[in-house]
Amino acid sequence: MSAAGAFEAALDEDEIREVITQPRNIPRRKREEIASILYREIVLGEDYEVRDIARFIEHYGVFYLILVSLKGSDDWAHVKKLASVSSISALIMLRIVLEQIFDMLDDFSRFEPELKKLARGKMAFYYQQFKAILESTLDLWHRRTSKETPRSTRRAAQEKVDIVERVSRFENDKASRKFLDLLAGSVLLSGIMGQVSNVEDHLESLEMLSLLYPGRGWDRSMLELHRVYFANLHKYSKIVERNEDLKKILDTIGRIEMEYGSRRLSLSSYSHSEVYSVTTSGDLQHMLPVESVKLQDETLRNLFFAHWMEKKLLTYELKGVNWTDDSKKNRGPMVAMVDTSGSMHGDPEIVAKSIILALVRRMMKESRDVKVYLFSSEGQTHEIEITDNKKMATEFLDFLSYTFEGGTDFDTALREGVESLKKKQYVNADILFITDGLSVVNDKYVISGLEQMKRENGTRLFTIIVGNDNAGGIDRFSDHIFILGKADHWDPENGPANAIRLISAR
Image (cartoon, rainbow, N blue to C red; front, side):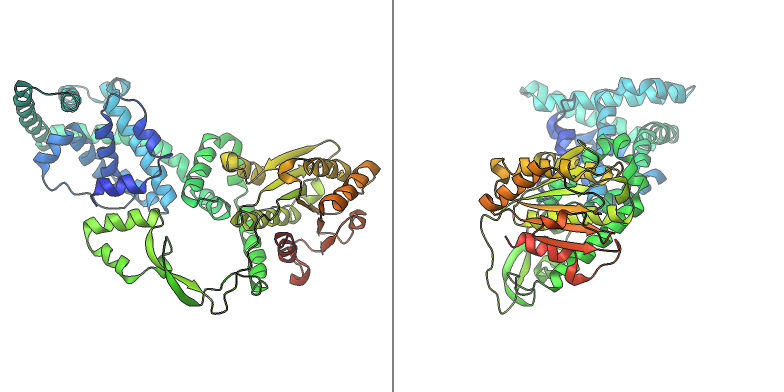
């Protein structure tokens, strides 16, 4: 597969494709080819080498000058270093660079005021030369997309020779190179680095969010998460400020999932202990040796990365010798009620969010929905359907950035929960109630409605008390209650993992 072929196969259509498909004065095919070159440089981390300079200039004209000037910059090395952090950051860097280069090629007039300030005196001459080469390049690209007569074909051939000579002279002239340095450093890279510095401040949080995010399709979900995040930086900047909380949530989820896994041997469909078959995935740890051979060849290396990003690498499928299928079809959804009152602020808030995310990750593996109600004072609830794929990233970020404050009203929360169970999608759902227990249930209609749902639909109410030993009277209606007296410490036998096990067993 060629580099362009690897690019076509590997990149997510919704993220980079929208940059390429945006209507421009640059022919679509040229946009794709330029993106393919920059993909190799930024995403694959290659030092892209132009082996046949004359042929490259024939095809790409002024882009050759732009590429050479960028690659010689220290800022370009910094962009590539940030891109190497992860596949997500690589795509973010690629998008920023593509947009800036396409903008310059497509609408050079936008950059002219700044360039005219910089290109004074003798530099003005080289500025005009560069502009003329750019215009000739665009003209050539458009000629190649139209039907050519024998006469126009001969003219195009001569124009190819001319563009090669003009670009080569421009590159080899010392004064011209000074202009290219100005173009790259003060205009192109200035715009690129302005956006990169904004991204750089958020990379750690974005990587943390990627680990937390319970998306169904990892690649597309991650890209959607980052797109929503950057589109609303003013709204979600508090997540960056609370980065330590994210780390604590991730650690708590890890602990919950570890406890869940250590006690689910009898429930597991299989354990990873014996080679069962060969399958395709993105699991590098269990990759077949034949795949690693591709890394030794430049062309095959592109194919390797394409298959890795598509999760199509040949890998071993591992299962246990006592494999049994305990999967259940048509398992029900879950309605979760989370107390977000001021008394839950701190460790209880972190534990509550961790439990919900651990539950959602578990439920999504089984294609089961979770609706979350955040509640505090009377009449104050916020509904999040956190497994709705169409708005998953927005809902997830809203949930993590939600600040716990206000009073506590159990009646409002349970009323919303009972009402949601009347909807067809959640008619056979259970209820998970997470609180610190500092309230009581007084509304007799809420109580009777809950009792009715239990009788008619077999609804179960699971309650987790965080940071308190008092259930506040809700234990009278709970089928199972888990008391975590200390928010940061609990008995594994009576912890969140057991609650998730009981919920997911339905």
